[in-house]
Amino acid sequence: MLKLLWIGPVSGVLLIRARVCESVTARRERASSPGGAGIAEERAVVEAIGIR
Image 1 (cartoon, rainbow, N blue to C red):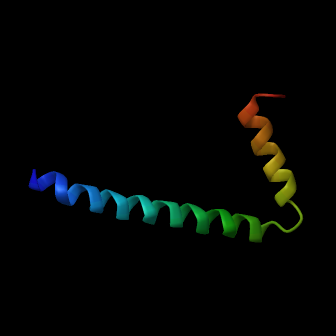
Image 2 (cartoon, rainbow, N blue to C red):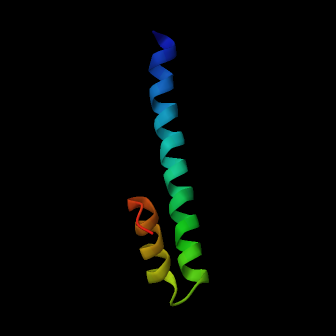
């Protein structure tokens, strides 16, 4: 039972850290390609839907 008491908060912290890293990476990618952010988003949506 004690394992479960500390695993919950630890996994929560790890999840938050992963989300922050993803957000920072996405923000850097958007900042590095000025004007192409809309195109990259469109491409991601098209790939997610499966339209070619």
